[in-house]
Image (cartoon, rainbow over the protein chains, first blue to last red):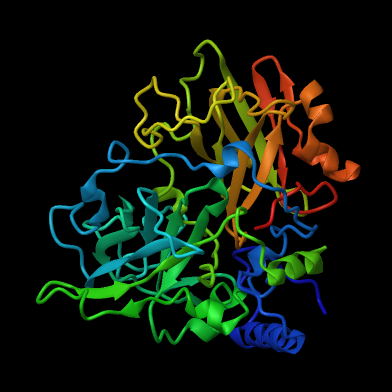
Length: 266
Length: 180
């Protein structure tokens, strides 16, 4: 095989070539018969992961000291208005207004209370407010795509925003990301720290996207897809989506699949 | 009760710069304040090239080894030490914090910064520890359990009020990261 070009702007391969690589990883995963609940760190169809994924075995120390706590965030840190991404300009942002809500829990189903949830996303045209995003879709003067909130006593978060559009990137020729919202979460201990992405049901780009497919288990991938919820939809105002998030941490017993995956990386 | 399956991670991507950085994110204490130390380093990829679009977070106790549970990491008031900081790497892959030297949290344990690393191309955050050099580190139960040939990757260097800790995502001197 020729050397893979890892330049993030190379777009050196076709979608068909990337699809073939992803299909090969899926075949190998199914043949192995070991369930993986997490994202692969090294997923070569996502070219940027090749040189940035740790390859040596991870250690599993008991978290100690500072790691069994989390930073404390509260209403001094976050204004309640920051959970509404549609009020930053002088007018309404363009696109499908929506509410995204859900519950953050630990692996035992206990609510993660009073912790920070941060989101960022493209606008309805698929454009980020970022100088490196130069794709020719319009910026929206009434939308920055950034929000924060603190979970309530039941672990709930809630944002009012605009449905993001898909956008092109240069992992390969004609690469498009499925519409998604980036989420950053803190748990009750630092080892639960999670950054991930929420997707929308039925997106035709799922099968073509190496970042989404870097979660090789289909059931695990589904856990990143929100559900349309008509009870969250507000009459004549916005649609509604529900997405629940489960955090883990070192205080829980490691899953066997994670251990085996780490050994495989060694 | 059966355990709930964890939500998988995805990369932070290249476009977090409008969302995650904030005023005072890297200044846990105002630079130049008596007692302030500079905690810095460079994030490298598998070819040894610096990673200019990484995000590094630290979480640490105070100088006495106490966990601080104070609000205000996102809205610094200039006086409250909260123990949490966040810094984006610059074009040369460097991150810099102004903070306090963390203290030892328990008898015989070496002091360290808990560190989380995020980057485009890194599909899950990586957790590690930046240990301060000294006698405690030489006898720390965890550090001495790490294979000797990799132990140095968890050690910061300290000179005056500067503490330096480079992070290698891959390669011969790959930093020891902690799995879930």
